[in-house]
Length: 196
Image 1: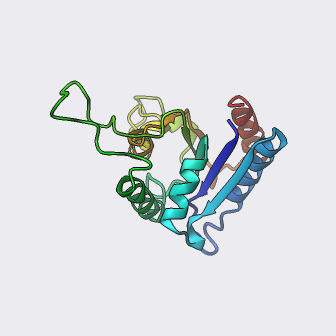
Image 2: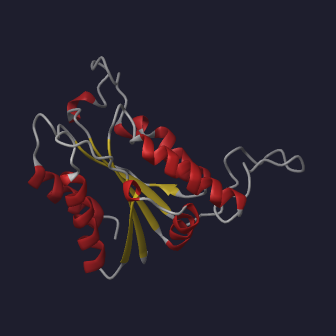
């Protein structure tokens, strides 16, 4: 692994969600990777982007990290717009995905196997107000035993559709009611160092 793309999907809400933790996590990841000889590029969606340039960044990257707050059980809407535009650029040019993978000549080819980004990896790093104990426990009434990756199922599938391997994500929990910023940073460093 040589190249890392970090996508900042934070959408600022003044006096409510300023993005300070998102910024600190991106800085942490950048430091970990650059200190280990990797090159890092970042995109802050809220500042604007060119879909074709973002497609080229995806082609350049060995690892793509989506850094995102969880807004209403998903990434902010600006990320969905970004993904639609960048993945469509990758489809129209056939640089990220050729088609859905199926063919009339070979019915054994499955839907979702047309991606051309094999060998590349994707992971999300999410900040949640939900506490960690709300997940992976069937007695919890809201998530009903689901894991964080289940909430991000559609995000992960977008990258898998393009042929990328989806890595276990990283989550910071209880960021509003019981924040542990120093612990988040230390745990994230360990998570990233294990990828090297």
